[in-house]
Length: 225
Image (tube, rainbow, N blue to C red; front, side, top):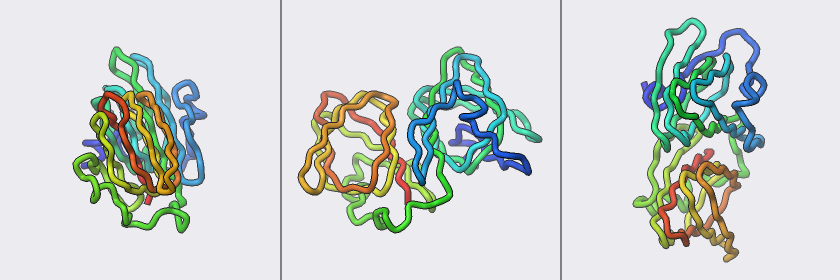
């Protein structure tokens, strides 16, 4: 089952109960990063051996910023233990459970919740005419794809300049300390220094990315179809 292999949490259905929003249930642990009509992006932080109570979330993509070793408890289901590595990405269809960090180290992850409304007519056409997977497959890899999202891992070597490409509405999670420039289709250049764990929302755009730093730049891009 892909969700057990990849997910932060198993796919679990909520049955007949009011939604238990993690921001309300555990405001110390879940922090809002971005919200619009398409996504809600949360940052989860769990201290060593810390737990959060029962809560539920919709279809989501999870980006692990640290390793994870958790116990997952769901109503009417056997307990599960999961382990993940920093930088891994997961997709799940929705869940209702409690979780406990079994590690002696803090856990941090970014959770991109997908709202019911798709991007619609104001998004880029799909498939993308300037798809980075077609134009620069050496530096982009598809981690997950379904009817709603495509998740890419992008790795740019120091001083590498990629081709002009485009994205639809998307969320970026930066995994490394990096410094890039983004040159838009109209020639405007945007400076883009980032720290590991930062999150950005972007509307559809065409651009050229250049890694002007001395380090490998790694980021996760969650594209909305």
